[in-house]
Amino acid sequence: QYLFEPVFLFRDILSRLKGSMGQVCSVLGNFTTFSILLGADIMVSSVSWLARSLACVVDRICGSGKNTVWQKTAWHEQRYANRPVYVKGEDCMAWGELDVAATMKQSIFPLSPEQLLAKAKIVLGCEFGTKAGADASCLAEDFQFVAPIVGPLNKQEFLKAFGSFKVQEAIPDLKDNSWFQVDPLEPNRVWFFSRATGTHTATLNFGAGIPATGKEIRMPPQAQSMLFNEKGQCYTLTVGYAMDKRIGNTEGLGGVFGIVKAVGHALPFPEGQRLYNPSLRYEAFERIAKIGEAFGLGPTAVDKTKK
Image (cartoon, rainbow, N blue to C red; front, side, top):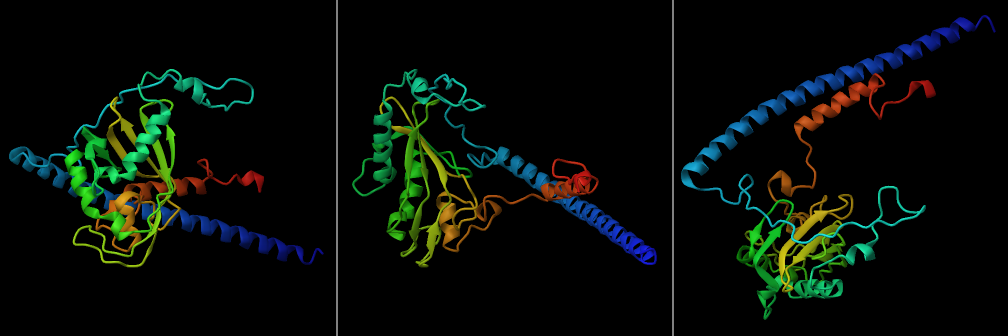
């Protein structure tokens, strides 16, 4: 037993050294990549700032750029609101579960939840007024379309754009798989959630046109909504807000961006490629977090005392 003790001790020392060297290499690697990524971000950010500044000067001189990324049209302010009423009792949620019925009783909006749900389904059924023979009066004159990237579009812009896509013709088996709920805190808003599916079997009139690919389209769950005025007309439509990027084959993209992604014709800019494109700066600071973890810092660091 005493004869083998030095052997065991030497093996333990080698194991510890190997672990320490691995940690040192990992820290050095993360620090090096942090420097590379942050340096690249500084250069890219500088060029981007210069390009946007020049574009802003041109826009001011020429009066161009209206309703583009940095000059968005103001969207509608909230028009109706209910004061939240919470469920009481020992079994209620810690963070405040709404008593939906009691909250909705305060509503002064003239249309009932049942009427609003019916109105929303009519708007969807006539494809927002673009279906052949449909009446676009279901949309208010001050209508706005607001998606995560596109919009606000006014009524005429939206009707022209959406009507030109011919989505139903390109994807005849399209199923929205929707369910509906009136917002208890904003009683003139109908939320509808969808998990759309379909097959691209005819030309999608997008850009130069996308011929049938036969590809399956599986969208992520999307939160969408319609806001109605007192006449029962939709004055705001929000679509395309993905709730779980892991689901479907669009990498988290919703709306038309998701459809063209699913059929293999993703748009040629980061926002059209996937829901989340990490910036160089985020990647750089992610490496700093990894260095902190190596020294036992941060919420994800391993507690070595428990090993």
